[in-house]
Image (cartoon, rainbow, N blue to C red; front, side, top):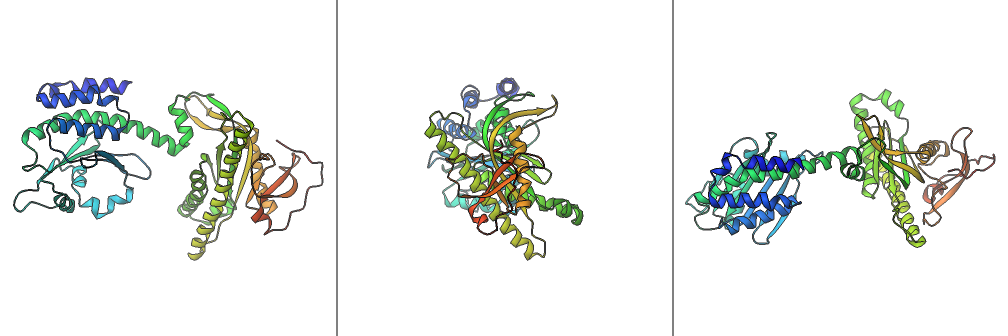
Length: 435
């Protein structure tokens, strides 16, 4: 792809011509073999072994990449000679304000301090970063942290420690410094791909994002799927929007969606859209199931996960309401509809502005079913289209129209909700199975 061609052009400039033979061999390895490695963690581990083979006495190596992510600010790839393994850790944004980060050499590098080197085996070593005391306890003799800038100007970091008496030689550091631009370009390629995945997962969902990365990017691209369709809504949202300051209402919506979408995601669902004060999600069935037994097991799994998510969301809202009443704020109420049907899963919109979502009669029916939650006095409603093999503990609420003049459906509630409420009056008109 284009990024690889850019890497080769960039790394074969005058800086490459001035490298020592050993530096050139490490850089050549990065270009010839390292660029084929698809995992940044594996790349870091293999690079560490190349440094060892070049007689650079590394016993610990860490590559730190700044990230564009809603929850984390960086990804650390740490290789240890003792284990021969690379561990990956992504600290949250809150870590930026903790002493462990603020008092670290990496923070100084990120802020533009340049290369930081501390000899640890000399009399009275400079231990101005608390982290260095830990290295001394591990037997380290030398520590070096270097900036590793990307082409967009983002400063990342590369850090190595040695336990050899005398630490790193000038030759060692020249080799590392020389190969660093090549490593930076490879890590930038990995980082760009990861950023694309992160942004797509954040804004359109994990499965939808994967489909876009797999090439479903044109208007009309999509597929028909069979799925549990989840539709939820915040009750009395118009009144809340009028009563609350805008910032408070936005915080309330985020709390509400945190409960709803968090429950969907934690139970294997896919959140597709936030629509004002509502959300649309799916729990897809596996279309590859051929036998009736496999199909039934898959349907039961998807339906069970959707129901678990609904119960989870209800419990989260209960906890949220306890917190709100403790602050003197009004509790909130909600409705969730669970429906099963066929939908088109793909891109809609204009050629310049697309959205990956589901459309179809079943999606509309799910929204209308949710509209009955308030009328029937239940937080969670289930459609009659749930497959019979789905072992869901539910109770019939009788037959009711989805909307004025619409089909009459037998509506179900979870048994624990139905036991706590009297059955609503049943619509006496001709029953229709719906769907």
